[in-house]
Length: 156
Image (cartoon, rainbow, N blue to C red; front, side, top):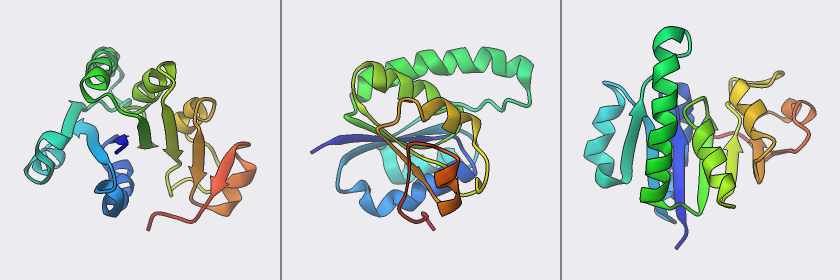
């Protein structure tokens, strides 16, 4: 059974990622997101199948400068703890380091661009499009925005 790591930032990215919940049981899965008052409640449902990174919004640049490097180191630790075969992400910044770590170890990366993007790229999308094995968009218009994208419908 393939080990699949589902990772995203909290908020809308996580909401989109959780739309994949019906397929979780098809895999030896694990979830990583940012630790917030809302996401800590997921521990009750997922137990040891969920881990957290530090919440760090980029609009608080001073604290983000310390939190992001910490999250990179913690991502390395979690990668070796989980040892996934595939990374599936809806973004954003929280997921980028894990995708690059996985790619370094020749693992598959599947990126699902957020539903909120209809005509423009996201920062995480621009960073991951170069390394993604599969890059999915949720609007047909986005096929013109990302060269290597695939449209198979939306998550909702």
